[in-house]
Amino acid sequence: KAGVTQTPRYLIKTRGQQVTLSCSPISGHRSVSWYQQTPGQGLQFLFEYFSETQRNKGNFPGRFSGRQFSNSRSEMNVSTLELGDSALYLCASSLPRSQGHYNEQFFGPGTRLTVL
Amino acid sequence: KQEVTQIPAALSVPEGENLVLNCSFTDSAIYNLQWFRQDPGKGLTSLLLIQSSQREQTSGRLNASLDKSSGRSTLYIAASQPGDSATYLCAVIMNRDDKIIFGKGTRLHILP
Image (cartoon, rainbow over all chains, first blue to last red; front, side):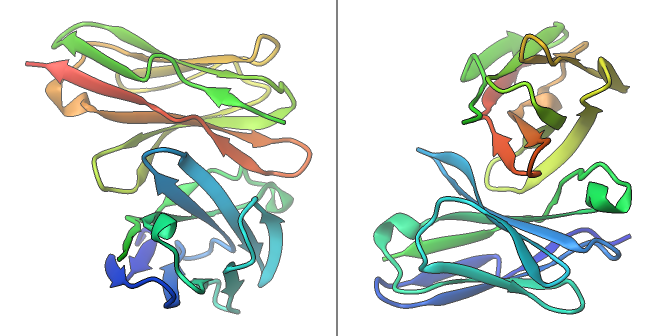
């Protein structure tokens, strides 16, 4: 079974631009979560989508948004990029306990975003 | 507010030694706890998941324990190898809302 895939793997943008990252979950997984990882803050939860609906949200500004499509693929968008948005963005897919599972998280390889 | 702490932040041990990594959390109302490893610049690999009703889980040379009442989990690695060098992270999933909170990890270096 193929794992979680993320595209692109690397991205360089300048301040003020916007960016869209993509995540394809493991086949059959309907829950997708997004995380930002930086050396100083560690892994921080951005949001989770399940069946095209945002189910949970972390403490990030409104510049960070996401969506999920009917095939469970998810996109994350960051508008008006700031230098501090440089990070590794990870997505994870899971089978939630609402479907009788344990919500075990399976991660993709990440997208390395550099903002200049 | 749940806080997850991993101590030490970094650890170096000679090859072949057994070692224990620690994870503590402040709110015991968790659904489960998951251990991951992360190689530099890569994504996270799931190692073990312990449900809140369980005390431990084993996979190969790895054994994870959970003491929910005291807010602690340990990851035991037997007969360490250089390939075990990585950052190890623990995460808890909260029972009330499925939110996931990570510790900052322990960076492990196995000396050949």
